[in-house]
Image 1 (cartoon, one colour):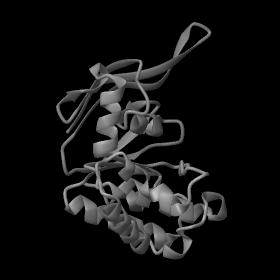
Image 2 (cartoon, rainbow, N blue to C red; image 1 turned 180 degrees about the vertical axis):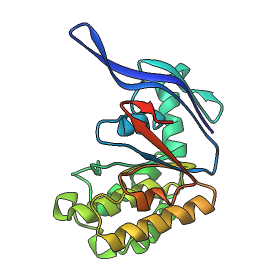
Image 3 (spheres, rainbow, N blue to C red; image 1 turned 135 degrees about the horizontal axis):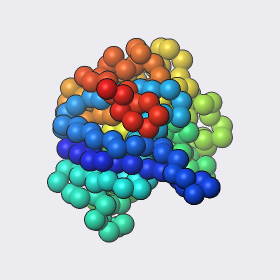
Image 4 (cartoon, helix red, strand yellow; image 1 turned 90 degrees about the vertical axis):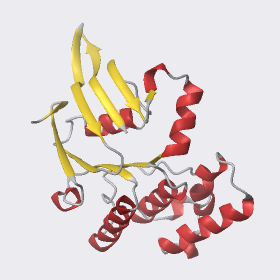
Length: 220
């Protein structure tokens, strides 16, 4: 499903390359659950953003479901992202001007889904994450943990083939965190490919494989 070959990303400072990612080679099969671990600043979030097509490396090749990603036009890339990828961001990235209901519904607006079906799908997510009573609130009226739950609901609603999660339980209490990881495990059992970045050994253990990053490289 995912093939990264010789992916490097750097910024140039005072004429020298400062590597964020260095020569990453990674293959992820459909249906895998991969946990990415490593100290702060090791390049974990950048790697996730490259896989999620939100960031471009300085060099290297990326093949996603048979598509040479860096040869695609922006519109084609965006189409693949909207159709196949769900992203849980560490900083939520909810839209401030939209209610909880509207935030969760957003990914469905890019797909050919009837209004009545959208309504049913959002209702199902509100129920699943026990936030029905918050549907008309705006992000600023929610706690960090509640915003994180809404972000996860939004990522899952379009039934993505690939779920990318950056510290998905970072702002949740331990019970909520466990519930989210159980949902991820259930989705993975249903065939969804998951790549999560986590500091938590417990969360990492939900994965079928752990990749460790150190100074932008895969630590073998």
